[in-house]
Image (cartoon, rainbow, N blue to C red):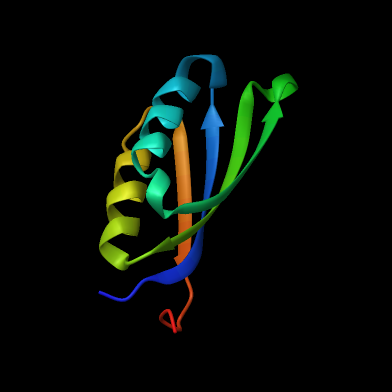
Length: 85
């Protein structure tokens, strides 16, 4: 499968409870993550994380599926239309 550039956006509710599971999973997929930006929102007890990824559709589906099954985690993703040159 062709790899494509994309992003994954996460909202993590109850961050003290759920952040460790998210970080563990992201470490497992570190080879496809090009960049990670996280913004804590302590007054709302949540965090927002944006990932820039270089992945094929199977890798993206695996990552987002596992993230989406975590308690308190909402996830959205997108891949570019053009495959890697």
